[in-house]
Image (tube, rainbow, N blue to C red; front, side, top):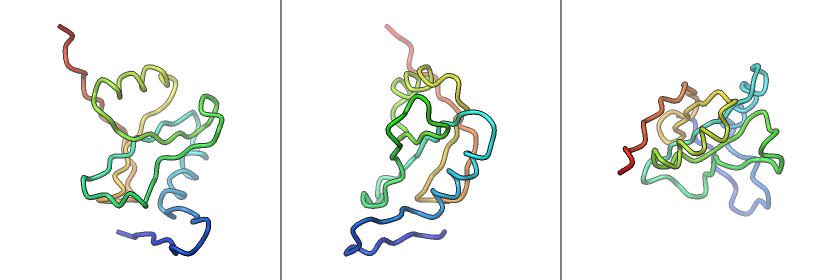
Length: 108
């Protein structure tokens, strides 16, 4: 797994090259995309993959942190016109797979 290390003295880090490659690949793929990022518990908080431009609703590629099934379902409903993908930067930061949604718990 290629790890990107930012120079801590550098003012602006250019981000993980694997993240940039995934974004570029989807930017060239037809349609709109939502990338769910699944971090492991020991994830380095300085290696952030979830950030977007200012125009969220019209962006071709969006990044979002995976949350619980209820919150994910709300996000998927709002961005229902998008193909949803999963990336796991802490295990294989070059692998992009279609996201398998979990059903939210039944309402009581």
